[in-house]
Image (cartoon, rainbow, N blue to C red):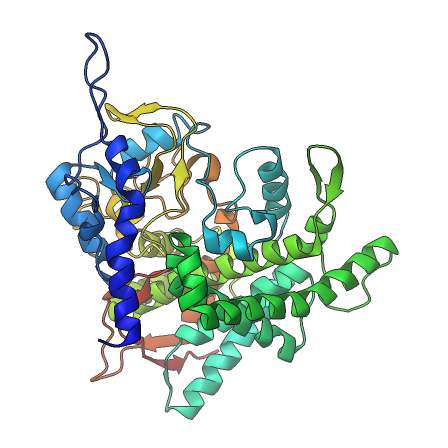
Length: 512
């Protein structure tokens, strides 16, 4: 047995011991007196010491199978005993609405930040990780102030079309667009974040650092359980992670300082392509600490900018990839979409604009079906509760970690006919998805953006970007399956749900 194998075996055996007493304490017990038993939702019985650790799949790729099996065995509300607190999962839209909408304030909190987040995140001041309260509201307000201006999306579209055309020219019109989508959207959200185009070398250095940080943070997730062991055994990886974080600071802090100087001088930013940005909003945020009001530190702003670009790029590019893959797989859907675009635009207009999109119901249906069938993440970020609550007839104890299986809710056969099929028509008049409410207030049939007070603040922008990109990509090119290299729609869940097999298509330019 080599050293690495020994380490992983040791971690596997020793980790449950740190959970033993608290896991056993959290197993529900009858209340005193004559009152009825206050029970957690059902779930697989925990083993002594191990809890339900053995239920966890060996890789992210089997997470969907796990939740499908749990729902079939125990119903739509399930408890797993993993760690110090029970983890409770909702897999039904009605149950999710009962918690996140009807008791939205109670379920708006986040669990305590894990080790990697605290080590890399300056004060953990990010929109996703900040606990519900005044600080969170200030940060969320700054984020929702970002506007997707026409010139920004037009610039990003033309850069994307150029990259696709160049890739097609090099490969007989055969293109693998996954990374091209990600790079184009990284450009767009960087522009929205900083208000100006970054130098190419800086732009891609930022992306390299951010991708490296995410990759290493996932590999070092055991740090959240056994930090001292990780710092000894995986110290090289840990030092690389710290170096990448410092590299990100070195790249972004000069941009932050330059933008701050422009604001203090009350001057127009001299670059011709500059515009109001997320960074501008963050520079104006004042947090009220225990003794004083203060501005965000430079390191906190780096975290927030990194969060904005990463979250926007990874989820939107994943969703765009899945939608375009389904349009390649089902050319009749693509043809119907192009026909709608032509009916709104006429034959001579080259670019689909926001005012055109508002008239395209089938385009919206295509995007919604992509988000329902292939949500960018199978789970939300976790919630927790500060005091005991009751949902679906079960007790959610104080401090429990709560999550929703977005994939199970969006593919519920009781709600969606032939749920695993890609059928945009279900969102048209008379379909089961007609008038679906993405906020969840009127009911939750799908929730790719979450629901309640923690609803994704970028939902409106994400929907606009996806509709804009999808419409223009099919208006500029006919996307055709490559013979012998057919599109396979198997999923590979991770931080976002990727395609298990590379997506390849032949792009045929449409006549002007």
